[in-house]
Amino acid sequence: MKLPTVEDVARSAQVSRQTVSNVLNSPAIVKPVTRARVEAAIAQLGYRPNLSARRLRQRKSATIGIRLDPQLNGISGAVLDRFLHAVTEQADARGLRMLLFTAATPALEIEQIRRLRDGADVDAFVLTATFDHDPRPGWLIANNVPFVTFGRPWGIDDMDAPHHRWVDIDGRLGVYDATVHLIERGATAIAWVGWPGAGGTGGDRRSGWADAMRERLGCSDADLARLASETHDGVPEATGAATALLAGRPDLQAMVCASDTLALGAMIAAASAGRRQLPVIGFDNTPVAAALGMSSIEQRLGEAAAGALDLLLGPDGNSVLPNGEQPGASHRLIAPSLVVRDPQSLPLHDPTGVAGTDVDSLDRKETE
Image (cartoon, rainbow, N blue to C red):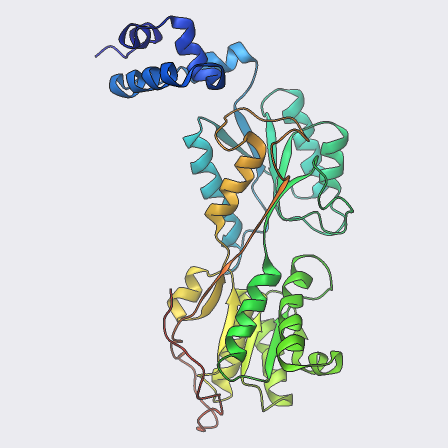
């Protein structure tokens, strides 16, 4: 069966071939009534534009590059993988492609970006895994390469600069809401298990816990120091950190963690200490959290992917906007949501045989 052509659409809509081309490439210049007639003809005939031919004419690749993060491992490593799937699906809906590439370090990623840009293989880039004083955004800005970051420009004084487009999850707000959720259900001794360092994503999430504890319970910095532990993002490390917290603070009534990996370690430590029902809240809402009935903070990665593409292309466009020329704000900070679950019992031996001393009033109903 012969595929419909531009001429077929023009004939059906009773317009010129150029008008059809304008509707496809520059719809804003076409009168709304005419545009609606052409779009109806396109839908009725099932016409699909020849994207390859358009790319050749416009000298654009219609491709966005993104590094396949070498750190995709562990329980929480799947977060960037989920973001990658979401942004790829949404880019495809706009007629764009995602090109994956690898790089072991930021410096090597910059070299890959330089090579892809010089070869006209990619129109823009999505950067992930931002960190304090990340050199990649500065290089891209200096070389006038369009980009958006999934993650804020930590440690760089251009948080609101129009040339640095970024989308991020409001980790502070998510942890703040999770901590308030526990306080409103009667908990007063709530521990924090996070990552080392005061900056970046980990510091942002910790600030949500600290702010809630100060505002709602009047905790001092000394109080917070006695309730906090920092460790690397591994289950054994988190188990050790949480075990030490429980031993030093037998009055603990709940734990909030910077990731689901840390939360799993905290759950194991609590179960081993005979406190299987100790409320533990993680971050990322991974499949592991769902399987174990672990409460966790959902990042809404679909919204993050949509926000990244909106900042690069505009709300409905499929052509990359130059740096600093996107309409509206240059960033999106997305509010996460708390998913509260009824925890499952981990298959661990309780060496004490003593029921936990958790707060009975804590609400553990499913609220997904």
